[in-house]
Image (tube, rainbow, N blue to C red):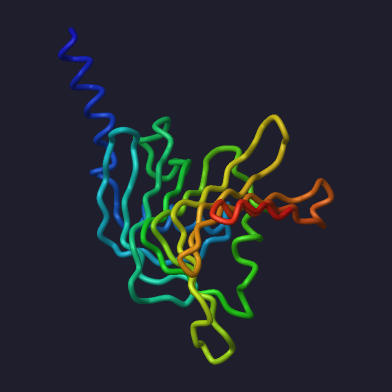
Length: 199
């Protein structure tokens, strides 16, 4: 009896191996676009892992006009509808070793994400870089992201953006959230080396 349960459970978790690749990628892209306004391209090849939670790991092809040096995107999904690829729901999303190009047109990319919903899952970015560029596409400076996280705080009923960074070899942390009227942005910058906090 225990063997039957184990085989059934293992078969259930393995169901995504039988998915239609094209439909799966379209479904995930649509959800990322609708829920987080993330417009990016994946490679058609991906890895599926069912431990510690079901997730798909993709190589990024292009994102924010960046086409080189892109890393991986790991998408965690709910185990509730594994047998139905059209009904899978994205939970947590993790970007790893991604280069973000920010310029005059998209400089508010990270702030705009605060307007999205993170009640059902978090967005995590780690081991990545933000390239700030001028109108001639020249790099002005680079912000290294050690770990960045968008999450929903149920007690305060708001999204919070927390990031641990390094710029010009100076480490700092940043916590940001929107005011209740969504017209004000509150931030706390912590420069540990200088023992300085800026609100």
